Length: 132
Image (cartoon, rainbow, N blue to C red; front, side):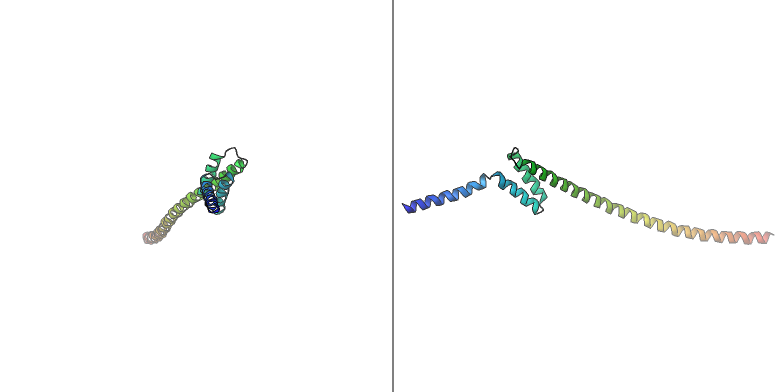
């Protein structure tokens, strides 16, 4: 009889553990979301907060869960904006480098034309002296 009782207790314990995975208390779901946020996995944390709020919208911790979710969503949006701005900055730096190269070529061309103009002035002065 004691052996049967032990087997029954073991079956209940194992069944309870399996049931715990299927029906998680709200505190465990919220703790999972908090752990994901603390580990830096913000995308998964936002999804976990959404799951928690879908199941437990009226729970006592729901306002904090909403605030945490909204904060993480804002952080993710800010990170996306920073990435977009960095890409835009890289494109602008490339364009600027091209414009600086154009400017350097134009300065060389200007210096060459100024030298040519100076030569023309000297030729003109010589020509005017000969005519006098």
